[in-house]
Image 1 (cartoon, rainbow, N blue to C red):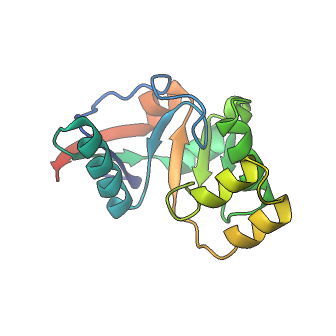
Image 2 (cartoon, rainbow, N blue to C red):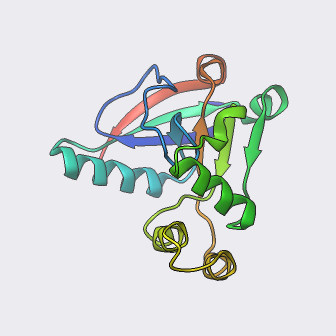
Length: 163
């Protein structure tokens, strides 16, 4: 296994992922989501399995991230900042800020911070208050692959782990 090890939590083995099957209006757009944090994938798998009443699994892949960053149009967020917040809000509002990218990586709008995003989107707090609240959190990480060529050429399925 060479490259960055990434994980996809769910309820099915996914040996040949497709990037245009996911839900629209997610954090980084409609794509195939993975993370380099195993515990995060386990959490995603358990949450999905609970909703579906199925068995949780974590799919394990190798990603040639170096080649992806060199050959594709990528957007990487390293902190929860104004750029990240605007991007998330645009995507969650259906404006598809991710449409010009092949690969997007950065913090998840998860349980720790989704309330802040929702409060801002609903107008209950202003932009500066949202940024202040977000700055109190260290981002975790997820990757959205939006271009099938990345999956086909740079993402290699390794195994599926039952949780």
